[in-house]
Image 1 (cartoon, rainbow, N blue to C red):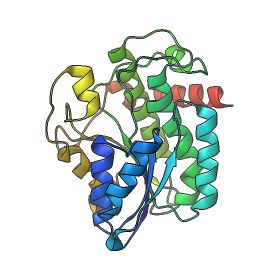
Image 2 (cartoon, one colour; image 1 turned 90 degrees about the vertical axis):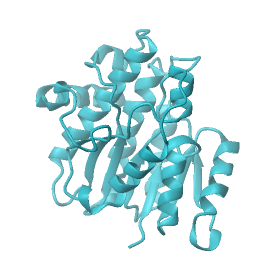
Image 3 (spheres, rainbow, N blue to C red; image 1 turned 45 degrees about the horizontal axis):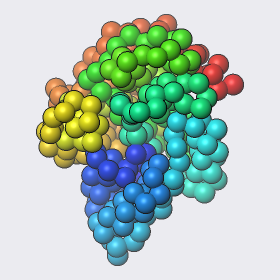
Image 4 (cartoon, helix red, strand yellow; image 1 turned 135 degrees about the vertical axis):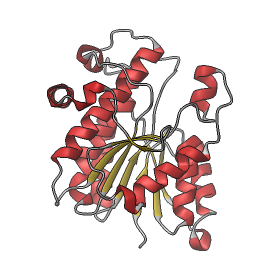
Length: 266
């Protein structure tokens, strides 16, 4: 059955490849990007993979600006009352400007807080059978809650690894708390050092086949084997559901991450 699927960060890399796969399978894609020209190109490319070459909808939003994210999430809820899947794929590792206009580390803003805000705002329209797929990473490090809600000048790897663990932690907490009326929420490591712009610029290596990551995103979004996966972590390096960082299995620490995000957004 055809589903309506939102995927953030879908103008290049794993996000674009996953959008093409899902469109080719007959799903209705909603694309997101930060750069209007790149978004338009992605819409054209994904449209070529849809039945009838239908151009998918696209939204240009800077996920580092949380006020814009709030407005966009409300707009999505108003415009798409029958959404089925949200894929929070957009991510930042290395960037010239690491502090947002709100005084946050851009890695936490884009990788952790914006996906939380999008998920919370759209959960009511997902409902039973809906899914939220959050792109985590093998890079996970204990979260400094102060650094998550106030810029402290963390280096690239520290900020990225902490932001991805924080994402995994709130994914598990919301997923485990979800009942039959709510969507499945799952965190997925798509694979280490895949051939993305992030890997090339951040690590100086070409990376492995990007299709590895696109395939698991598509599977997590619509595959039967993820239907009962709420609150779990899938490690594509292992090719299986697996334990995340130990902090993500600590309910008190998971709750502390969510409480800190909620306080920031209130």
